[in-house]
Length: 625
Image 1 (cartoon, rainbow, N blue to C red):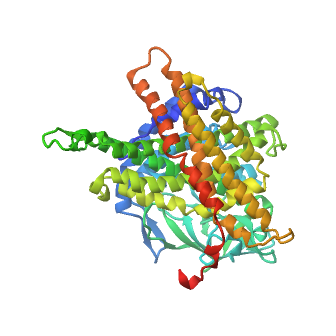
Image 2 (spheres, rainbow, N blue to C red):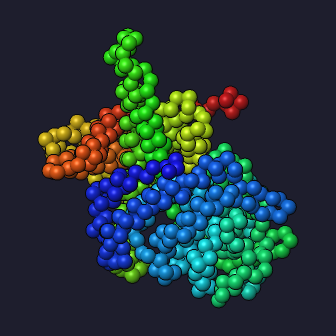
């Protein structure tokens, strides 16, 4: 048994009791996967995650990959390679593969539930195994030759990479200078340097396929001038899968990092000893739109990774707290002869543990609720036989709600997980948490990256406000707000057991709407064409985009926890519950009440701070910082 414990009971509770995913299984596009089979797969994935995958977690951190600059070769720690092989041999990756490539079609909600356990036990395994998702995209949008390549990616288990970032451009993807030169024969020569490329090299596979953003010669500036190209480390015979000549894409550095050390983060150089040759993805110049299929999946993965790590940190902290005997009960502090108690008896430890529980379980519900929107999109495409969904139809609405939620999953998930792991989970252990005797110090280091890559939290906030709300005219947000309002007004059920908390949910909704109202007002005032308009009012918006993202996320989590509590109260009324189930449902109600009372009221303060925002901050001289 390794460091990781899967919260399988909570995963199944969300899937089958809260979101009713059992209704989708066994028919339609998911006819090969019935509910009983799905439950068995979840159970076996939990076993695999807790054992074979978790076994290399600490060893691979202490003995990270070794890069040889002379050969540009990376040697992975054998313990990790064994974990990676165990996942590959399990066949569970098959649910990430489309039917055309021999996969088992499964709802996204089920796939993300499975992925959570892999990401919590050993996240780098999931990152190296992301190749199957890349193959699915090649199969869906690629040329006929690229679809053949997708087959070999699955068959040979090759790594795949998303190649965006450049040393000088950073998050400004449109400033990238990597260029593509048309060879005139259907192939392109890529020249440039990229950095922070995940899984670009290892000795666990014999080939790597790269998805590269580059600017064709003569294309315009910014992101609109970028195209997406597919090229691999070695030439591939698309009929046999045999590898040919070395292609001119080279790993010229592997970063030394604070955490997540076993995931190879590489610098890639295109060109040099020989040219780097690739093909245009889908044979169309639509790079950013195409890459966003990859980016959106990656952001969901990052949020899920963070949330899974928080769950692991909480369960480790809970286990420690139940065993750690220290001090007397607070009511007997002055009695020197009073018996010593486990620290779960101390009020502040209980506060900390319940905060961890509420967020870990609420954020899990956020991931799976978002995934249910992806389920609806998949079903709509299956029923219509079209990738393009007509605006206003249920599938298209679900697609926009999914888009709205993705920056919350990534931004809120990563920020809350990182902070809670350090300030609450690690803190539960006292000084012992600072040692490598327990896994939580590695969780803290490994989780920090989640706030940074696939778009920093600030970028998620900008995306959330400008693209997912303003561009959408707040339609998707309105749909979500109406659902929250509906629960907030549903008083009297279960004898009014949650009425106080529903009232707090309603007040929190008003607070978040107040923040949005202020920001929209300042946005309108920034139009220089309007009377009294001043473009500098945009600064007031920019000072609050992260605040708004996190506040909206906290609100959604509170709503989902109260939804869980309603289901739990229904269950507690049933006869014949086991003691274990009764404790589980009781904990659900307790977590929802605690969160509503201790977290949601903070949103009123966030609104107050937003509404007094001015531009004094922007007028402070740089030299005064």
